[in-house]
Length: 141
Image 1 (spheres, rainbow, N blue to C red):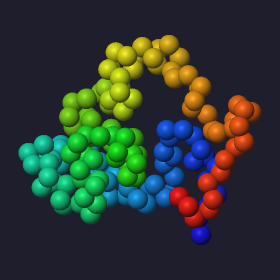
Image 2: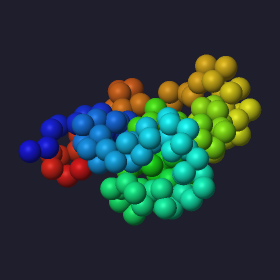
Image 3: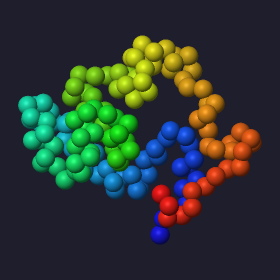
Image 4: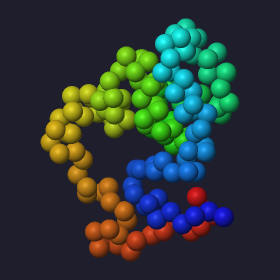
């Protein structure tokens, strides 16, 4: 039985909940394996062969190979685990976050220094009182 998830109304946001955790278990385990230098070297030497050692879906493997972090998140990846891929590639978390927003590293840094994203358009539907809050029916996720 699916739980009521009112937080699904936050535009552009994937909440890492128990369902996402289950979906991304092996993807996140792969990411954590990159904490060991020998695994990072094996991955860098032949990414596809290393990924094939993991019980990930083909789509998860493709998302990793494409370094599409938003895609990885939609497939159950947790950003704190996915950061290990960026670190393996020599990228900072700031560079990774910028790539996820379509911004350059400098644009992303300046946005964050300036107070972050505007809340306009990024609230739960109905939160500002202008529309009825919408909840997804149970079992229709």
